[in-house]
Image (cartoon, rainbow, N blue to C red; front, side, top):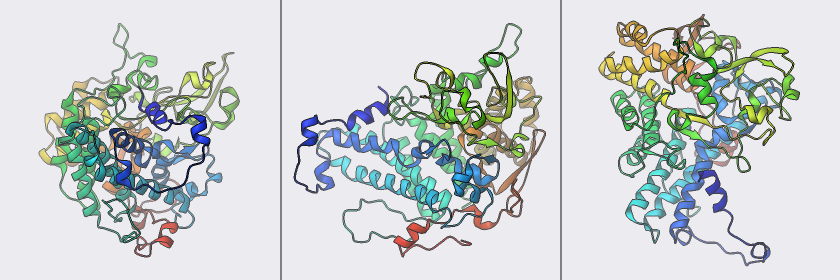
Length: 526
């Protein structure tokens, strides 16, 4: 059964008469709640729909999803209804501050700390919950610590030093905390994820096969990302070897694989059966998606198909409104080689035409095609309702993390070259893997790493990684006809014109939180 359904059913346990019967109010302490296994399971289940995963879920047709805020900051993506959500324009123009962007900043902050609070409750009380055996305790603790780590990972990348809270709030004493150093926050993140990977007994399979519960490969993928990230700016700790080891756990699990392009008898790629269209049709997400964001019609549907057409074509779809909420700007599209890269061909990762039943074609600026759900957009069954899943982590990203981390820690080895080649050869469909690996093998470490960065920008565009990459590398990707040159981020102009400053590497703390907690100080420059 899908986890989303279990989450819904978990909240339905009263008859109508029971619901309407007035009961005296009382307060139950946390240790009174954790009195049977179902309580522990429900406490962990709630973590799947808040915190970091909620960034892919929260939002609307006009605003886009919360996770799109970083790409808006990068200057490479547009939202054509940003006039209704001023914080998007402030981000693109690098004019954000704690007041004019308080709504989105407070959403990020409060969602993460709500998740952390719930995880802390679970982590403290699950071990003493009656009826759980040791294996169940370890698994549930592994899941809870995974989500706590992910929430802190989002916070530390966006805000830098943040309050480090590891115990439940059970009194009003010491409720307002000062900021802990980023190094301390990362230390807890790594501890939590190492427990999840090594001690929780999580299933060594993909999440789809595991009922959409966190698996060992998913935890290892997050750990690999964490180790890669803290090896870059601002900490610049050398954890590349640890990142490589965590990525190898995913690769060697056998739970994941890259979807391959379908080819005809002559060996030519069949566009409709490309790897990207297989992903779009959700045929291969079990092995392609390491952490899928689950949606279910009637419970929590996917709104992503509404982002695949401009508003001018709304009337041609089943949706009441469509919007270019995640439209790549020309400076981003220039990262793709139009002659060699399958991803920039129409109806692969992106598309720019609509053909009606009479054969009339309308052209528009490129929009995401990987989110194109034919049935939801144009079908008669469940019109304007979709279960299309998106990925927080993909197997392609794991391969790219491994390639970069191995190159940094061991050099441009055959293994590192192979991982980058796997991703690039799927896209550069006219070139053989041998041609690609041959060209990569002769590169210096820095040259090779920049090829990995380039591939991350192209391959992970719809996974919202670009801003995180820009701030950890402090490099800006200048692109022309598919060639990308990485230059210093600070002092470079955004595609919108404003210049990136040191302060933009972190977000301002939300004004609402500063007013509430006198122990907090604002990030420099805001």
